[in-house]
Amino acid sequence: MRCFDWLLDWTNYIYPSCEHIVMYNHSFATPNYEFLHSIEYNREDGVLILTRDANINGFNIGLGHFNVTMYGAIIIFIHENPRLNYPVTKDIDVLRICDELGLNLENIKAHVGQGLISSLGLIVYAYIEFLAKLGENYSNKHSRLSVLFHS
Image (cartoon, rainbow, N blue to C red; front, top):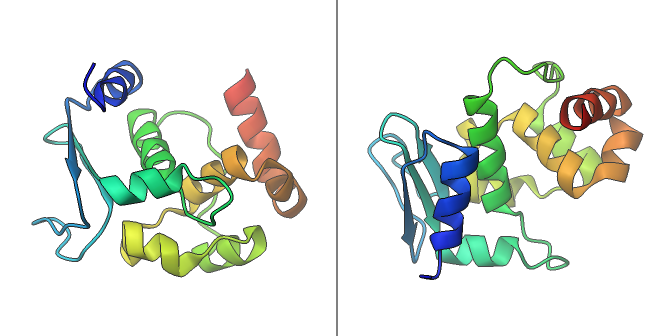
């Protein structure tokens, strides 16, 4: 099995519209987003583009790295499942979410791009990574996600 075959198998199972995974050694720009970033999902082409270092660092728990791979998977999940009853997050600013949950907004911007940060994506990310903090700061969002993912 090649190094990232497991990731392709996983994405094909969870995300049927993801047909290809491309891994770069460094941040990249694309025609859709002409700034350096670490993850992008092009739904029309079925391509997930990642960077090696951001992915490796994202899995190093305790080092303060944003898990860009998990965030990307969450964003794809939300796009693949638009009819699920997600909590409403349009009223919450991403800066506020980051401040209250202890996330580094500048780090997230460096990976994702400022205009592409989703408040719903961050809330779901916090549900996975910071469950207790999410419950303290956003109990109604926490409850909605608990019903959604455990029903």
